Image 1 (tube, rainbow, N blue to C red):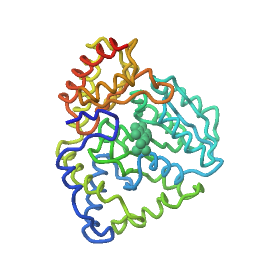
Image 2: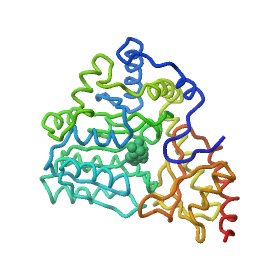
Image 3: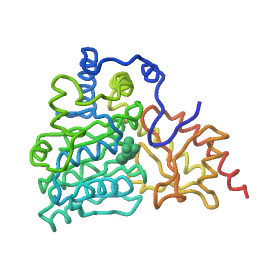
Image 4: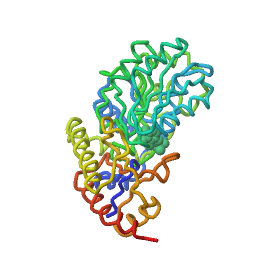
Length: 362
Ligand SMILES: *Cc1c(COP(=O)(O)O)cnc(C)c1O
């Protein structure tokens, strides 16, 4: 079997794969009503929230667009905290819909500084909302979201969080941390295929929604809320992915959130120590190294394309490269969702054999 060790899509357990062969059902029928009702309740358990939670059909980026257009208006001043490619994407989405975004960027491989967020909010009282990435998948950094949320809440701003590669893997208690609007995706930590974005919105989020004027139709949370009252989606949902979630969420609850978080911590430690034992250096600031993705500096004289080709063809291991400015400089090992230390051992063994061979190639 191929070791698909990229930060999403992630491999699926056999039970989850199996259910996706099921025949389609009526998405306005009783069977679907039960399924969506169950999934929504289980998501709230895993998100540690009593907020409204919607299951949207779309990838994570669709969910990012949804949370922006449902809470902001063109011309709104927004602080966009970015520590990498996905933080930049959030800024770009908000800007595309007419928000006036002040970017607050930090060096790649470093976490965002809560005091810098405080300063930015102090210097511009117009700012209405703050965009934050919990886990920056492009650099393998997990922001101190509790501290960032605290800073944002000192100024009573709307906090919008991309938790796409953290929720369900890394602690992210939505209500305890006062996260107003949060988005995640099915193909990252949830042992499900791509196709669904899950969002949580609290009362402050709904207050913002009441005056938000950005154009929206498909993503309209008003419609999502109305339909969820009868356990439906406004539009035809991605049924196979929903079948998958109905099984994978049960598996997650059976394992238990704290055990899942502990497993991701162990697996990530194995990844970091494994690459260091090979003489490689992790890219991320060790203090904030992510438990879902490990970014590694490419060794001298090893080209990413050659290395990934050899890993794939000779060792059946698939890793990710660097994105944008990190292209050709790092590679990334995804370890989220259905993953154990044994999977990481296999990746490390493959790297151990592949790297010297690639380095020796002309
Ligand atoms: C994967 C990811 C996204 C994008 O999700 P898609 O499903 O590819 O649209 C956004 N933010 C983060 C942090 C991610 O890891």
